[in-house]
Image: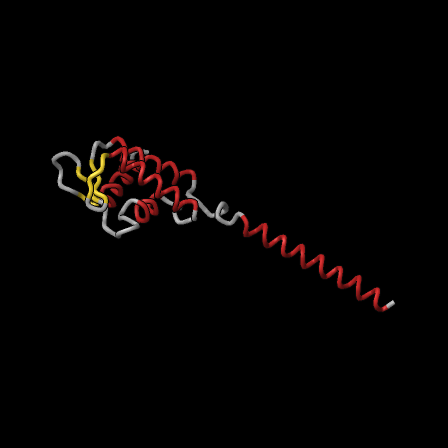
Length: 137
């Protein structure tokens, strides 16, 4: 009778262990899709900034090459999407600091040239636009 009880207990422990492993696998399988992303308000601000860039008519210097505004906006949108999927962007400030300030490959800062205005750092330019956008709400 003791052997039978030990077998039942071992089977019970095995089932509990398997259930715990399944639970851990389910938790970790989709961990990147569960990463915290920007709130709805932050997403709206980021989209506003990307739209502002695309329609600005300015040029963007990235790694020594000047790009037209729509191309710069598309590049920044790609970086934002990549970082947001990994939970690294939760606000418009995060977007500016982590995606729109410098090259993640070379570390060189992005700059902006609008007509005859002096060249400005992209983070300064976008932060000023974010302030204007928030004041206009």
